[in-house]
Length: 320
Image (cartoon, rainbow, N blue to C red; front, side):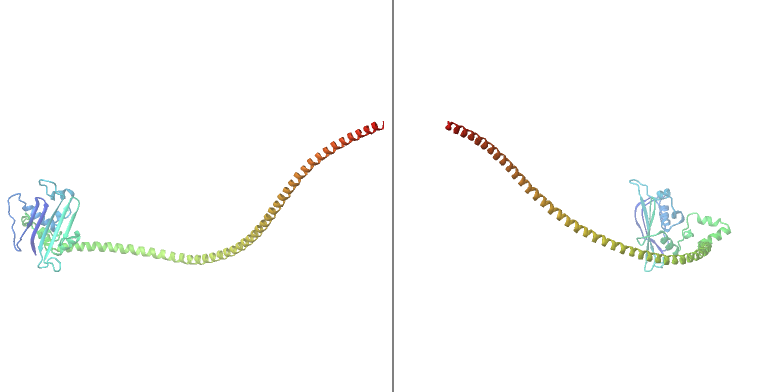
């Protein structure tokens, strides 16, 4: 396994760096003047491989990784490395090349595997499987590490050899496993206490269940009795209602008959009143006519008396 190419964008002094390739499978050397970006290229490789100083970054450290050249400020940067995986160092089937990319912004990182989004834990697991463990950062020997190795004590050198050999990873995992076992033991104890409490509660619930069953049985009987009483009262009410309705219909018929009789009586009264009015008018006319006749009679009697007297006077005159 070896690096085949590196691509950088907006990472430190690299604005838009074209793909750097090819790399040799044996030895490569990066040369250049001071400030040309040799250390930044080395940091870019560490950045993708998740070296400790690049694993957890604060906001100001993220900002320091972004390119700050002329023009508009960069808001994100990425580094992409293509590895030759012909020896299957990375545990990926049928993959002769492995492409890792890490993108960084002001607030978050993004990881890509084979140019597909991946989680941080997936990348960590893949790198650890290939020997790039963050707990064993000696897959990259930085400047000054060799001198430090020469001046170390025997104990420090032994510890370093353990780290290089990767045994500290297993020690850490062992400690993590023991801690998890202690947590599990505490959890088991807590679960036992919970089960004991639940068993006690279950006994109480069984008693409550029997009471509830008895209550439901009695409640069912109560509802049956209530339904029977309700049905009986409902039938009585319906019968009373039918009787009231029948009586009402009879009263309505009687009222209709009385109304018809009142209407007929009213018509008869109106007819009698009309006849009475006609006869009263005729009587008044006859009375007026009678008065006229009596007046004519009086006049005639007066005239007769007058004529009688005149006749007597004439007879007396004739006798003389």
